[in-house]
Image (cartoon, rainbow, N blue to C red):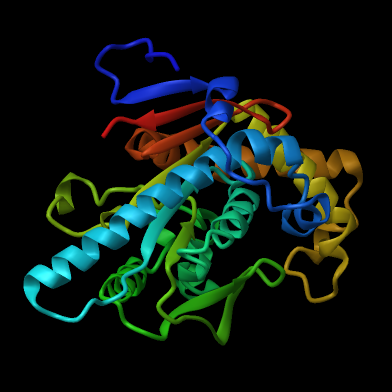
Length: 314
């Protein structure tokens, strides 16, 4: 373990090797076959990565969840009311193509294997994007993924219901195939032990003009930011676009089916233009500025392996 360069930093930094030692005796409960099912397109996560990075994090979160569960029991006892199960909410933020979804799926699988919190749900903020018809009416189709493209009121209501201990809390469902909300489809959460909320802007604040308004991270018990250099994320985004051009884009129902016929050079140029116009500005203006609000930051290298972990001091 080493101190960060600035004495005023709220974080303690760990090299990969230092972090890996904090796994202690936490067992590896995933197999290579499990990882094949959990990986996203062009996300390369090995069992070594799970062992060195995910298992120590799983152990830390298990300790935090246990402490939070005990605290809720004590609080309910003090208030003289029956114990109400309240989910432990973990926010996961970071750029497009940085590997958030794969990270969240693997973390969910590991957390669900701990005996004291077996019910773990994963929700993405994509479901809380406004439908395309609304975005088109507001001139926001080219701002999809920016803070203003989300139905923040609905997302806050969802989180408030979760934290009140309500049953059958519902979240809308987004399809990356049709690039839109699926009408009438919902994910139903029935008093889970843990909820992972994954998305681009989960650590965003309302801004000075709405400083008294609640924001998404008010409902988090723990937050994680998946980090990398922008040039590496651009490379991953381009590689993913090329892969999808050969697979999902060929589906006749795909929103992006017109791109399946692009040559490799055309596809690379198009992906880079999308990054320059949309994803890059969103990353620099809205996502990176929230990084230091996270409780834990995972820093990745070009091969997707984590090289450094920063944990906020208590």
